Amino acid sequence: MTDATALDLPQENAAGTPAERHLVIEPGRLDRNYWSDLWAYRELFIVLAWRDVAVRYKQAALGAAWAVVRPLLAVFVFTIIFGRVAQLPSEPGVPYPVMVYAGMLPWMLISTILGDASNSLVSNAGMIGKIYYPRIITPAASSIVSLVDFAVSFAVFLLLMLAFLYVPSWKILFLPVFIVYAVAMALGPALYLASLNVRYRDFRFIVPFVVQFGLYISPVGFSSEVVPEGWRLLYSLNPAVSAIDGFRWCILGGEIWWPGFLLGLGVTGLMLWAGIRTFRRTERQFADYI
Image (spheres, rainbow, N blue to C red):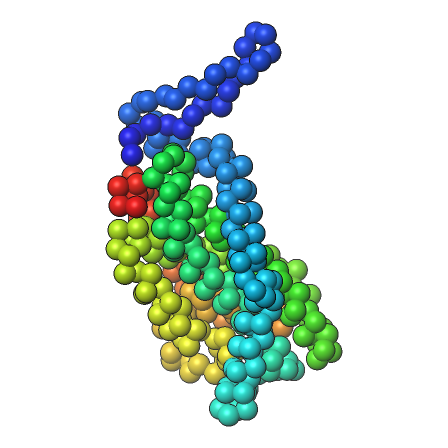
Protein backbone atom coordinates (compact mmCIF):
# COMPACT_ATOMS: atom_id res chain seq x y z
CA MET A 1 0.00 0.00 0.00
CA THR A 2 1.55 3.31 -1.02
CA ASP A 3 1.70 6.16 1.43
CA ALA A 4 -1.14 8.14 -0.14
CA THR A 5 -4.10 9.89 1.32
CA ALA A 6 -7.71 9.17 0.45
CA LEU A 7 -9.60 10.92 -2.29
CA ASP A 8 -10.30 14.53 -1.37
CA LEU A 9 -13.93 15.48 -1.01
CA PRO A 10 -15.28 17.30 -4.09
CA GLN A 11 -15.39 21.08 -3.95
CA GLU A 12 -17.86 23.21 -5.87
CA ASN A 13 -16.51 25.48 -8.61
CA ALA A 14 -17.72 28.94 -9.53
CA ALA A 15 -20.62 27.53 -11.51
CA GLY A 16 -21.85 25.64 -8.46
CA THR A 17 -21.19 22.19 -9.95
CA PRO A 18 -19.05 19.62 -8.11
CA ALA A 19 -15.41 19.67 -9.12
CA GLU A 20 -13.45 16.55 -9.97
CA ARG A 21 -11.90 14.44 -7.23
CA HIS A 22 -8.12 14.41 -6.92
CA LEU A 23 -5.82 11.82 -5.39
CA VAL A 24 -2.97 13.47 -3.49
CA ILE A 25 0.28 11.51 -3.17
CA GLU A 26 2.40 12.95 -0.37
CA PRO A 27 4.85 11.17 1.98
CA GLY A 28 3.50 10.88 5.51
CA ARG A 29 0.11 12.36 4.66
CA LEU A 30 -1.72 9.08 5.27
CA ASP A 31 -0.49 8.84 8.86
CA ARG A 32 -1.31 12.45 9.63
CA ASN A 33 -4.85 12.16 8.30
CA TYR A 34 -5.69 8.62 9.40
CA TRP A 35 -8.05 9.48 12.24
CA SER A 36 -9.71 12.31 10.33
CA ASP A 37 -10.26 9.82 7.49
CA LEU A 38 -12.41 7.79 9.86
CA TRP A 39 -14.94 10.61 9.85
CA ALA A 40 -14.61 11.10 6.09
CA TYR A 41 -15.40 7.40 5.59
CA ARG A 42 -18.30 7.31 8.05
CA GLU A 43 -20.73 6.37 5.29
CA LEU A 44 -18.61 3.33 4.45
CA PHE A 45 -18.78 2.32 8.10
CA ILE A 46 -22.58 2.53 8.02
CA VAL A 47 -22.79 0.54 4.78
CA LEU A 48 -20.50 -2.22 6.07
CA ALA A 49 -22.34 -2.43 9.38
CA TRP A 50 -25.73 -2.63 7.65
CA ARG A 51 -24.43 -5.27 5.25
CA ASP A 52 -23.06 -7.42 8.10
CA VAL A 53 -26.35 -7.21 10.00
CA ALA A 54 -28.37 -8.11 6.89
CA VAL A 55 -26.11 -11.04 6.00
CA ARG A 56 -26.13 -12.38 9.57
CA TYR A 57 -29.91 -12.60 9.79
CA LYS A 58 -30.70 -13.30 6.14
CA GLN A 59 -28.49 -16.38 5.86
CA ALA A 60 -29.52 -17.87 9.23
CA ALA A 61 -32.52 -20.20 9.18
CA LEU A 62 -33.74 -18.92 12.54
CA GLY A 63 -32.76 -15.31 11.87
CA ALA A 64 -32.82 -13.13 14.98
CA ALA A 65 -33.99 -16.13 17.03
CA TRP A 66 -30.35 -17.15 17.42
CA ALA A 67 -29.82 -14.10 19.64
CA VAL A 68 -32.56 -15.52 21.88
CA VAL A 69 -31.83 -19.26 21.77
CA ARG A 70 -28.12 -19.05 22.61
CA PRO A 71 -28.35 -17.15 25.92
CA LEU A 72 -31.48 -19.01 27.02
CA LEU A 73 -29.81 -22.40 26.53
CA ALA A 74 -26.70 -21.19 28.32
CA VAL A 75 -28.78 -19.87 31.22
CA PHE A 76 -30.57 -23.21 31.49
CA VAL A 77 -27.30 -25.19 31.54
CA PHE A 78 -25.56 -22.90 34.02
CA THR A 79 -28.58 -22.80 36.30
CA ILE A 80 -28.63 -26.60 36.45
CA ILE A 81 -24.86 -27.05 36.86
CA PHE A 82 -23.97 -24.17 39.17
CA GLY A 83 -27.32 -23.47 40.83
CA ARG A 84 -28.70 -26.97 41.38
CA VAL A 85 -25.72 -29.35 41.26
CA ALA A 86 -22.92 -27.18 42.68
CA GLN A 87 -25.36 -25.23 44.92
CA LEU A 88 -23.55 -21.95 44.33
CA PRO A 89 -25.37 -18.95 45.82
CA SER A 90 -27.01 -16.22 43.78
CA GLU A 91 -26.89 -12.50 44.49
CA PRO A 92 -28.98 -11.65 47.59
CA GLY A 93 -32.66 -11.50 46.67
CA VAL A 94 -32.04 -12.31 42.99
CA PRO A 95 -33.38 -15.47 41.25
CA TYR A 96 -30.51 -17.58 39.97
CA PRO A 97 -31.61 -17.52 36.27
CA VAL A 98 -31.82 -13.72 36.39
CA MET A 99 -28.30 -13.50 37.83
CA VAL A 100 -26.92 -15.87 35.18
CA TYR A 101 -28.63 -14.01 32.33
CA ALA A 102 -27.27 -10.69 33.64
CA GLY A 103 -23.78 -12.19 33.32
CA MET A 104 -24.50 -13.88 30.01
CA LEU A 105 -25.49 -10.60 28.31
CA PRO A 106 -22.05 -8.91 28.47
CA TRP A 107 -20.25 -12.19 27.84
CA MET A 108 -22.21 -12.82 24.63
CA LEU A 109 -21.46 -9.25 23.55
CA ILE A 110 -17.73 -9.63 24.25
CA SER A 111 -17.34 -13.09 22.70
CA THR A 112 -19.31 -12.21 19.55
CA ILE A 113 -17.24 -9.06 18.95
CA LEU A 114 -14.05 -11.03 19.52
CA GLY A 115 -15.05 -13.71 17.02
CA ASP A 116 -16.50 -11.48 14.30
CA ALA A 117 -13.97 -8.64 14.42
CA SER A 118 -10.92 -10.92 14.54
CA ASN A 119 -11.99 -12.58 11.27
CA SER A 120 -13.40 -9.48 9.57
CA LEU A 121 -10.30 -8.56 7.55
CA VAL A 122 -9.99 -12.00 5.99
CA SER A 123 -13.73 -11.99 5.23
CA ASN A 124 -13.35 -8.68 3.36
CA ALA A 125 -10.14 -9.60 1.55
CA GLY A 126 -11.42 -8.51 -1.86
CA MET A 127 -12.19 -4.97 -0.79
CA ILE A 128 -9.01 -4.57 1.27
CA GLY A 129 -6.83 -5.58 -1.67
CA LYS A 130 -8.39 -3.10 -4.09
CA ILE A 131 -9.23 0.21 -2.42
CA TYR A 132 -7.91 2.48 0.29
CA TYR A 133 -9.83 3.25 3.46
CA PRO A 134 -8.90 3.15 7.16
CA ARG A 135 -8.88 -0.61 7.72
CA ILE A 136 -9.96 -0.26 11.34
CA ILE A 137 -13.43 0.50 9.98
CA THR A 138 -13.84 -3.18 9.02
CA PRO A 139 -13.57 -4.75 12.52
CA ALA A 140 -15.42 -1.80 14.04
CA ALA A 141 -18.33 -2.23 11.62
CA SER A 142 -18.52 -5.96 12.31
CA SER A 143 -19.03 -5.14 16.00
CA ILE A 144 -22.38 -3.52 15.21
CA VAL A 145 -23.85 -6.98 14.58
CA SER A 146 -22.98 -7.89 18.16
CA LEU A 147 -24.81 -4.83 19.45
CA VAL A 148 -27.91 -5.81 17.48
CA ASP A 149 -27.75 -9.31 18.97
CA PHE A 150 -27.33 -7.71 22.39
CA ALA A 151 -30.44 -5.56 21.91
CA VAL A 152 -32.52 -8.64 21.04
CA SER A 153 -31.14 -10.62 23.99
CA PHE A 154 -31.73 -7.71 26.35
CA ALA A 155 -35.39 -7.53 25.31
CA VAL A 156 -35.71 -11.21 26.26
CA PHE A 157 -33.98 -10.45 29.56
CA LEU A 158 -36.65 -7.86 30.36
CA LEU A 159 -39.30 -10.54 29.80
CA LEU A 160 -37.36 -12.93 32.05
CA MET A 161 -37.29 -10.37 34.87
CA LEU A 162 -41.01 -9.83 34.37
CA ALA A 163 -41.62 -13.59 34.62
CA PHE A 164 -39.74 -13.72 37.96
CA LEU A 165 -41.38 -10.46 39.13
CA TYR A 166 -37.95 -8.94 39.58
CA VAL A 167 -37.59 -5.15 39.46
CA PRO A 168 -34.10 -3.91 38.48
CA SER A 169 -32.19 -1.36 40.48
CA TRP A 170 -32.20 2.35 39.57
CA LYS A 171 -28.55 1.79 38.71
CA ILE A 172 -29.69 0.37 35.38
CA LEU A 173 -29.45 3.97 34.14
CA PHE A 174 -25.67 3.45 34.04
CA LEU A 175 -25.94 0.39 31.79
CA PRO A 176 -24.95 2.25 28.56
CA VAL A 177 -21.62 3.10 30.20
CA PHE A 178 -20.85 -0.57 30.79
CA ILE A 179 -22.02 -1.52 27.30
CA VAL A 180 -19.38 0.86 25.90
CA TYR A 181 -16.89 -0.60 28.37
CA ALA A 182 -17.64 -4.17 27.23
CA VAL A 183 -17.24 -3.18 23.57
CA ALA A 184 -13.89 -1.49 24.29
CA MET A 185 -12.78 -4.52 26.32
CA ALA A 186 -13.50 -6.86 23.39
CA LEU A 187 -12.29 -4.56 20.60
CA GLY A 188 -8.72 -4.32 21.96
CA PRO A 189 -7.83 -8.03 21.68
CA ALA A 190 -10.02 -8.32 18.56
CA LEU A 191 -7.91 -5.74 16.71
CA TYR A 192 -4.74 -7.50 17.81
CA LEU A 193 -6.01 -10.90 16.66
CA ALA A 194 -7.41 -9.47 13.42
CA SER A 195 -4.00 -8.10 12.44
CA LEU A 196 -2.33 -11.42 13.24
CA ASN A 197 -5.01 -13.43 11.46
CA VAL A 198 -4.22 -11.70 8.18
CA ARG A 199 -0.70 -13.13 8.14
CA TYR A 200 -1.12 -16.25 10.26
CA ARG A 201 -4.44 -17.90 9.43
CA ASP A 202 -4.01 -20.37 12.30
CA PHE A 203 -5.31 -17.69 14.65
CA ARG A 204 -8.85 -18.36 13.45
CA PHE A 205 -8.61 -21.63 15.38
CA ILE A 206 -7.24 -19.94 18.48
CA VAL A 207 -10.10 -17.47 18.92
CA PRO A 208 -12.82 -20.11 19.65
CA PHE A 209 -10.49 -21.71 22.21
CA VAL A 210 -9.89 -18.35 23.91
CA VAL A 211 -13.64 -17.67 24.01
CA GLN A 212 -14.41 -21.12 25.42
CA PHE A 213 -11.68 -20.84 28.06
CA GLY A 214 -12.74 -17.33 29.00
CA LEU A 215 -16.30 -18.48 29.60
CA TYR A 216 -15.21 -20.71 32.48
CA ILE A 217 -12.89 -18.21 34.14
CA SER A 218 -15.44 -15.39 33.99
CA PRO A 219 -18.35 -14.94 36.44
CA VAL A 220 -21.06 -15.91 33.96
CA GLY A 221 -22.63 -18.89 35.72
CA PHE A 222 -21.68 -17.76 39.21
CA SER A 223 -21.21 -14.64 41.29
CA SER A 224 -17.78 -13.11 41.90
CA GLU A 225 -18.60 -13.24 45.60
CA VAL A 226 -17.76 -16.98 45.66
CA VAL A 227 -14.12 -16.27 44.70
CA PRO A 228 -11.85 -16.41 47.80
CA GLU A 229 -10.59 -13.03 48.97
CA GLY A 230 -6.95 -13.98 48.45
CA TRP A 231 -7.56 -14.73 44.77
CA ARG A 232 -9.71 -11.71 43.90
CA LEU A 233 -6.92 -9.52 42.47
CA LEU A 234 -5.51 -12.32 40.32
CA TYR A 235 -9.02 -13.20 39.25
CA SER A 236 -9.68 -9.55 38.31
CA LEU A 237 -6.82 -9.57 35.80
CA ASN A 238 -9.45 -11.02 33.49
CA PRO A 239 -11.06 -7.78 32.22
CA ALA A 240 -14.33 -9.60 31.48
CA VAL A 241 -14.81 -9.86 35.24
CA SER A 242 -15.14 -6.10 35.69
CA ALA A 243 -17.46 -5.85 32.66
CA ILE A 244 -19.77 -8.61 33.93
CA ASP A 245 -19.72 -7.34 37.52
CA GLY A 246 -20.52 -3.87 36.20
CA PHE A 247 -23.55 -5.19 34.32
CA ARG A 248 -24.79 -6.98 37.43
CA TRP A 249 -24.24 -3.87 39.51
CA CYS A 250 -26.42 -1.90 37.10
CA ILE A 251 -29.20 -4.48 36.87
CA LEU A 252 -29.15 -6.32 40.19
CA GLY A 253 -27.81 -3.64 42.52
CA GLY A 254 -25.29 -4.71 45.13
CA GLU A 255 -21.75 -3.40 45.38
CA ILE A 256 -18.68 -3.33 43.13
CA TRP A 257 -15.33 -4.48 44.50
CA TRP A 258 -13.47 -1.37 43.39
CA PRO A 259 -9.83 -2.64 43.61
CA GLY A 260 -10.66 -5.45 41.19
CA PHE A 261 -12.79 -3.21 38.98
CA LEU A 262 -10.05 -0.59 38.65
CA LEU A 263 -7.52 -3.32 37.90
CA GLY A 264 -9.77 -4.68 35.15
CA LEU A 265 -10.27 -1.16 33.80
CA GLY A 266 -6.51 -0.71 33.58
CA VAL A 267 -6.07 -4.05 31.79
CA THR A 268 -8.83 -3.08 29.35
CA GLY A 269 -7.14 0.24 28.58
CA LEU A 270 -3.79 -1.50 28.06
CA MET A 271 -5.32 -4.12 25.75
CA LEU A 272 -7.15 -1.49 23.70
CA TRP A 273 -3.97 0.57 23.31
CA ALA A 274 -1.94 -2.54 22.33
CA GLY A 275 -4.63 -3.66 19.88
CA ILE A 276 -4.82 -0.29 18.10
CA ARG A 277 -1.02 0.07 18.05
CA THR A 278 -0.46 -3.41 16.61
CA PHE A 279 -3.24 -2.89 14.06
CA ARG A 280 -1.79 0.42 12.87
CA ARG A 281 1.76 -0.96 12.65
CA THR A 282 0.72 -3.93 10.49
CA GLU A 283 -2.04 -2.24 8.48
CA ARG A 284 0.17 -1.32 5.52
CA GLN A 285 0.96 -5.01 4.92
CA PHE A 286 -2.64 -6.25 4.90
CA ALA A 287 -3.06 -5.93 1.12
CA ASP A 288 0.16 -7.93 0.56
CA TYR A 289 -0.84 -10.86 2.77
CA ILE A 290 -4.56 -10.92 1.95
